Length: 241
Image (cartoon, rainbow, N blue to C red; front, side):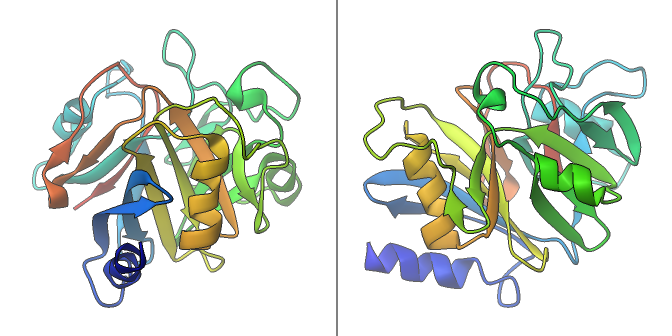
């Protein structure tokens, strides 16, 4: 355990390693892949549709949609979606808003309030609790609403239970307080919300973190020769090089 945490601490230092790094770690008997993105230097974007308006849905489709000379270095599913794969809550891409912010209760994990918004701006990215986002109204170049929040101002979501029996493969995102480093995490075995949120709070020490999804969770990371395939996705977050 100590060796794994030491390896993580060195591997995720953006000043000493590549601007996008992905590493496998163990935490309390669970296995995770953690990808660290330096938002001051990396081109971090959201993807949903191609030029014709059709939803992309797969990492290979995102890669094929890029301009000549661009490559997809990293990608992950980035929010919940309806049966037609349209975003459930707020979705902004290249400053264009496709779906509106939802501040009320709803069904499923998205409605396990408080939920939140992942917001990408110039040289930074942040996770906001939804009502805080609505009050601050930050100008996001890209934004995706999802839920529930995993960590809120340094505390776990109040409805996460240590003895929960609900286990799924999950993925989510957390950001440092200065917005310069974003951690994307996917579990490689089924975990509870409490276990997943604790990784962001106790190991990555992100003040705020957001759940993206479960069951459909997937990762593309060229640095570790991984590109998951499976169900068609809605919103996707990626780093373009």
